[in-house]
Length: 121
Image (cartoon, rainbow, N blue to C red; front, side, top):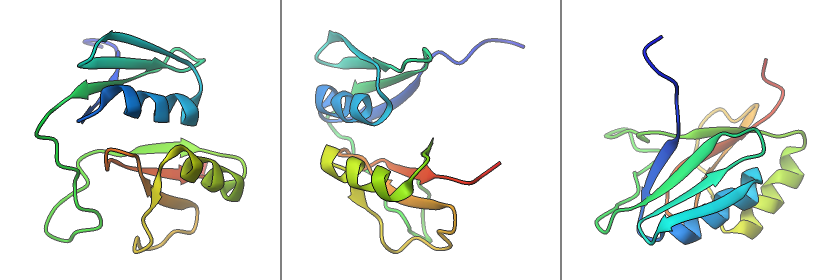
């Protein structure tokens, strides 16, 4: 082993707002170093950092010409309840994803895709 994963870092135009979204989604505490770097640490100690990027453009997904760059899979017990909750937090549903048997695709407020997943080993 060379090292340990410290954080997943997401570029965005509004780090505080994106951190509040992920704190609502994952639970945990928000810590701001400054206006350009805000970190959510979930109850298990995992970190999602939100980094200011003034030129951030969300990926197009689905888009056969490009990729989603990165996405998070968030395991849930009840996808219908979880969907209502993430939409209330400010997520948007991606309705043209293919093959959603055990997952549903959303975008966070900055446009990063993430999936709610269930029933997967």
